[in-house]
Amino acid sequence: MADNNDTSATTERRSERTNDRREATSLSGELLSQAKRHLDILVYDYDEVLLPPAVLTDQLSRFMHENERNEFRLLCSETRHLQEKGGSLIELARRFSSFIKLRQIPEEYRPVTEQFILVDDNASLRQHDFTAPGYFASFNDRATVRPLHNRFEELWQRSAAVPGIHVTGLSG
Image (cartoon, rainbow, N blue to C red; front, side, top):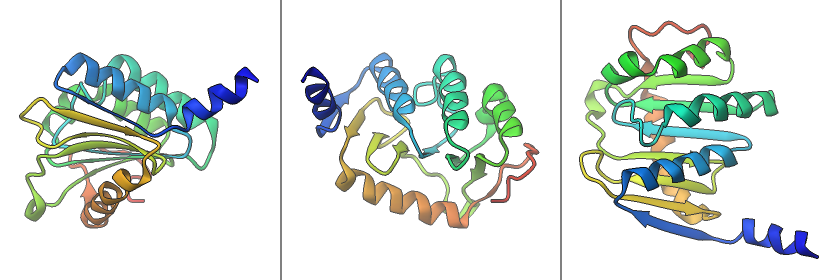
């Protein structure tokens, strides 16, 4: 009977707000660990709060090995920090080029100041403005995720490969 209670707790809708970067990093790690099919991330540039290096490599490796149809897409407005600090992510993109896509928003849509992580169309972590602390996490909440997903798809369709990062299979 305890298992039934545990299952219902994991499907319960939940939201959290924080201005603390450590708490946001913890929420990001929680979201990354829950990904089962799709993981879409929009960042201004490589952000170590939303993409904690200590967690990212392990969680992405796990995610990619769980199912050959899993997909990770990262869309960034600016790429300087991605090129400087995203070494492990770039290396994973090279190893898993069929699963991991890195793209840049075209000039006419930049800068994008909001940042978010979308997990399986039902969970998200959002920062409305990358220059200000303030993070909002939603779990098991498709209504909150849907407009973010639509925004991501709109930008993804207009995006291009990240200049200076050569990864086989990046055009997908």
